[in-house]
Amino acid sequence: MGQHATAARRFAFALALLPFAVQAQGKLGYVDMKRLLDNAPQVQAGRERLQREFATRDTALKQEETRLADLKRVFERDGALLSKADADTRKREIDALERSVKRTRDELRGELKSRSDQELDKSWQEINNTVVDYAREQGLDLVVPSPVVFADPRIDITDRVLERLRREFQTRQATP
Image 1 (cartoon, rainbow, N blue to C red):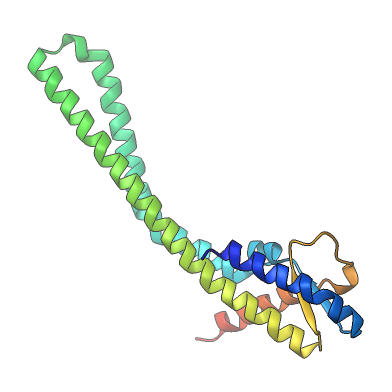
Image 2: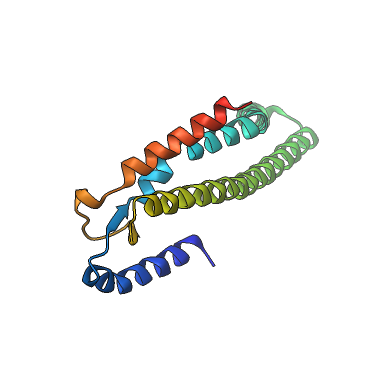
């Protein structure tokens, strides 16, 4: 089951509980999960790790794409001057390189998506745990995640959770 379906169910469940929490005069909180995912240093560090991890292969793919474009350009310019056998050989070379580039691009895209999902899952869990820990420490009875139709800024805990995520990240970075 996807994260969106799970998040939607959590949201629906939270909305169903909202009247009971309000009746009980419970303390409510709101958190903008998208903003946390966009700004948490844990997520940003994961993106940077992925960029470093895939940089060499991405550069190699771009070089192959450039080589393919050059071969095509030369073939278009000089193809009519080549013998039939030489033209067929060049065409097969271009076709083979084109298939190789496509296959490499598809593999790289698939692996990047898989690794991105892994990094996001790891960050999502840490962010979620931080929200829960903060809510418990502050005595909140219910925290409603985004998206919501309206949340009074008084109950928005996003900035405080984000600050805590930053501190935790810095502490981990300082620890050898």
